[in-house]
Image: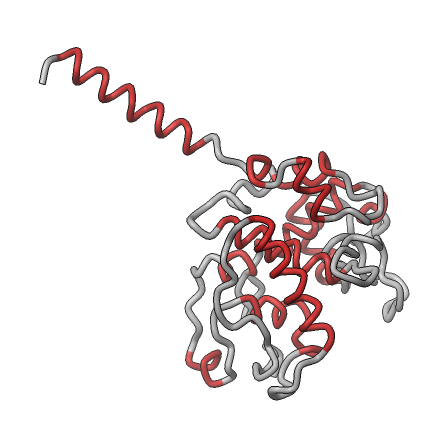
Length: 239
């Protein structure tokens, strides 16, 4: 091969690598896609806030062959957490409607709940969330960042939602014995397993709603669902 041909081959490889690195969430979730996915959302949840927040977690929705599935799963779970009802009712609410905690109740897309979560998310994001909780309900970028922090962060014995949906999580013997198999259902278990999981084969409305949102977004993003979508027969992680 001539020196010129070698140089041309190296240049083509460099361009190909550069194209791979250019992949980001915005190339999959365009503004038009965001609007179509969340047509009835509260105006608080803006596309720009989502994209800005996603840059804080560069591995979110950008890695591996299943990145579209991850985005569908994230929006499926968060749409249920903020649902106003129906298949297009996601992101309707900013704060939890039925507050069980007078201070550290659910806020934002993932409905961040509990003092320990506000403390940990605040430390990770360099925000005073434990003492100034309303930031999550008043700043849309921070609000999305808290949801992405929860999504990307493992909290033992729970794996991260990110690792589960990308197939990077290997169940332990205890997980297998508890019926916790890789799939979207484990993510539901991570988020709200104590309420929605371990009820036997009988479907429950919250599980069904999470799955319906997920399937809708998978179809919109042209990706597959994978296996084990529910957690009906899974013991929750606390058990």
